[in-house]
Length: 308
Ligand code: CP
Image 1 (tube, rainbow, N blue to C red):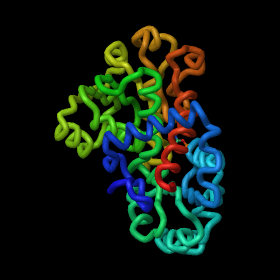
Image 2 (cartoon, rainbow, N blue to C red; image 1 turned 60 degrees about the horizontal axis):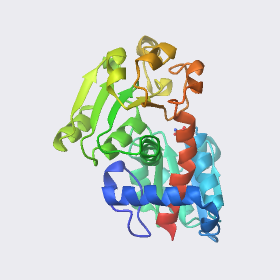
Image 3 (cartoon, rainbow, N blue to C red; image 1 turned 60 degrees about the vertical axis):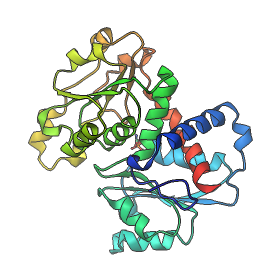
Image 4 (tube, helix red, strand yellow; image 1 turned 120 degrees about the vertical axis):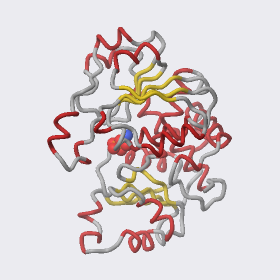
């Protein structure tokens, strides 16, 4: 699935080639440096945001991106309640209708595979803004952009993915993107209840990307350039006992910072709960607010790439 054509969909990280990733990063840099050059690029075009799950960053950064490019936006928050889904309309029928009103659809849904289903019936590009525990490819784009911006490289990077890896769509999407670069190594740090799924480990093996699975975060901190923390996602657990057992296993605090490399960075897709202590925010290695800001520029680059 390519994003080269004007009508391409953005469903999963595997579809991006390294060349397209580098092109998007370069375009995001240009947009950040000279935003005035991109004003009005998408004038007359409309983005529909269909969000069946809560969001702050993805929804608002996509809206801001479209508006800053001169386009317009419409949409529905809490679409399960406030769209005709509440009356029993299928996702497919909703997307058929909305694709007649908009030039692009940004979809967040609680079910894995929802974006692919939407793309199958849409006449305009569908962008997966998170499908349950499946993928969140545009988060991965901003994560990759952040790694390049903060460390001036992606090849050779050492990354620890920490927390709810079984349900973590951002971790899955970012790992798929990292597998396209050279000499990358990944540590999966998680309790067994929420360990990384086997399909992604098989993908890394297939692409000769070394990975390590461990529960010992302290031992990993001095080894890596990127610590990618994630929230234990309460909403994905059917058994409250399991959630309570794993919810506070990992927490980055000042002591953790002392174990990290001087030039490493701490990332988090956000929102956080208690897995990063607020005292950490002042440390220059805390990159998560800069990371969220990067979402604006990479999403502008993506919309520009899809719609011009
Ligand atoms: N990182 C992320 O997807 O944040 P939101 O849920 O606020 O969109």
